[in-house]
Image (cartoon, rainbow, N blue to C red; front, top):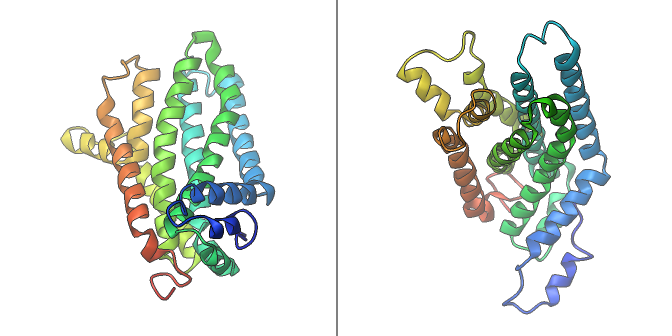
Length: 278
């Protein structure tokens, strides 16, 4: 729930016209972040994330059924789970950001605040990304536990931060677009969830990706799958950082296009009725 009519944003009404709107997204981001974390949603999602990561790390470290994996592979698998689940919760939070406020009846007060709709979507995007960065911080000790013996902790964490942030930005922006266009919050969440599954599915096909050019293209067009493939190539196969950069094209394209579309369309799609009247 966001109430910005009074308080900090209300002060922008007295600013000169030439400066109004500059930095308003920071105020929106601060308010949205406080709402996310003080309402309990953020801590609850982060707790569930830490439980899942704890279980997998314990199994990777002690279970004989998983110990056949080399230590590098165990680190890579843990990092992949951290990235996949971290961007999932970020996507779900962003998918609730606008359609959820419509259903709760709190979007009107936000739209009446003296801030642009572009500032609103930027603020909501930044607030959603705080969940990803919190998830990354939580994943640090788990990666350290599994990777300190083979001296790949630093590499794994840099990969996780880079690839994960790229995916989180793209999926959070996409989630906000879906949230703004959907009149039902349930529909927005469902579409966003299945969208992530569609992005992730190619890398999880039985037997791996098909051989030949089709499998190669399929692996590169899936943002999540290609991003995780890049981290595996560096961590497990020992490839140089620049050798497989082609696999980061898809996540980069998603982040750029989704963010650009969100900023360009924000004045039209952030409304009290999805695709309808203001």
